[in-house]
Length: 110
Image (tube, rainbow, N blue to C red; front, side, top):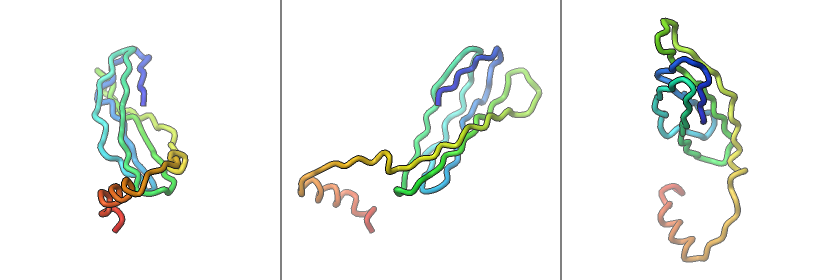
């Protein structure tokens, strides 16, 4: 997510909060950042996929305005609908490569 602050205030504790629905799992929470006036930053989050089922990612950006006595501010983001099948492409491997990969990931097949 690219955050661009066009306001003249400094945003403190600016945090991307994510929640998933379906067979998706957020691997780690993104760290809070401080955005100076007219500053920008990229926030990345890793999501683990457990199956080919569709999933949805919900998100908010939560922040405090420097010097303000108000409560935390929240920007609700649009949902991201993910169909994992859109990202799977056919590939090929020989018999030896297949057996090696099968042995490495055998615990996932039980």
